[in-house]
Length: 313
Ligand code: NAD
Ligand code: UDP
Image 1 (cartoon, rainbow, N blue to C red):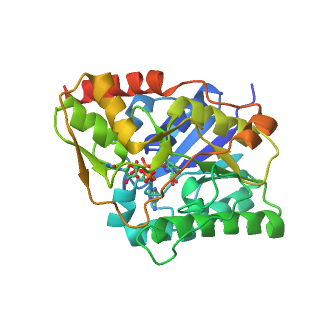
Image 2 (tube, rainbow, N blue to C red):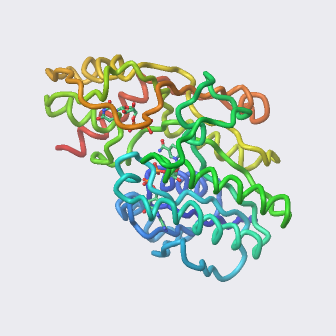
C-alpha cells in the first residue's frame, strides 16, 4: 500500500508530536526534525522503534538535507508560548523567517505540499471580533510580542510567494489557543499554569483584571482540522480553533472548580500588548473542510487535568 512521506519540523513539540501520531495513524512515514529548543524527546519517545518514524536533531534555520522522496512538509518549528518567545526573541524571528525559507526550499526541491503552522497572533490585539481570515490584524511590530507575530506574518508572506512565484502547493493554518496532554507544565501559558497552581493549591495568577478573553481548542480537534486542511486544495489561510470564548477570570474559576482546589485568584500585571479578545470565526473551516470541534472545554479540561495530575505525582 502507498505510504506518503511527511517531514514535520518542530515534531518533538506539543502540537508537532500529536501531528506525528496522527500522520502515522494515517499510514504516512514521518521524519521529525527538531532541535529540542522548547520541545522534548519525551513527546516522541513512544514512537522510538516505529518502522515508519525517524527523528533528526537539527536546527531548521540551517539548510535541511533529507534524502529520498518527501510528499508533505509540515512546518511547526517555533517557540509558541509568550514566555518562550519573550525569552528566545532572536531564535523566534530566525525560525519564522530563515526556518520557513529552508522548509519552503525543501518543499520546492521535493515538489512536496507545504503546510505552515501560523497563529491567531497574526491578528495581534484585534479590533474586529470574532476574527475571520479576511481581517489583516492589529500588530505592534516593535513590541515584545512583535518577534513572534511579525515572524509568523513574514512566514505567511513567504509561503504565499513560494506558492505564487514557484508554484509550490501550500497551506496556511491559523491556529488559535490549543491545549491538551504534552503541553509543558512550565511554558507559562494560562492553561498549564492555572492547572499546575490549582493542583498545588497555590494562588492562581490572573494577569490584569482577567477581563481579556480566549477560546481554547482541545488538541485532537485541532489535529483533525489540520489533517483535513492538508488533504484539501485550499491555499489561502484557514482558522482552526474552538469558538467557545471565556474571560481569563472565569477560566481561572472554572479550573478551580474542576480540580476541587483551595486556590485563590490573585491579579498581577497585564503583559504589554496582551490581546483583549480572541475568538476564531471558523465558518470557513466548516464550509470548506466540513470540520468543527467536537470536544467541549469540560471534557478537554478533564483529560488535561488528569494528564497534569499524573505528571505531578
Ligand atoms: P512547542 O514549543 O511545544 O513546539 C515547537 C517545537 O519547535 C519544539 O519542539 C522546538 O524544539 C522546535 N523548534 C523551535 N525552533 C526550532 C528550530 N530552529 N529548529 C528545529 N526545531 C525548532 O510549541 P507548540 O505549542 O507545539 O507550537 C507548534 C507550532 O504551532 C508553532 O509554530 C506555533 O507557532 C504554532 N501555534 C501553536 C499554538 C498553540 O496553542 N499551541 C497556537 C498558535 C500557533
Ligand atoms: N495569563 C494569565 N495568567 C498566567 C498566564 C497567562 O492571566 O499565568 C493570561 C494572559 O495574559 C492572556 C491569557 O491568559 O491574557 C492567555 O495567555 P496565554 O499565555 O495562554 O496565551 P496567549 O493567548 O496570550 O498567546
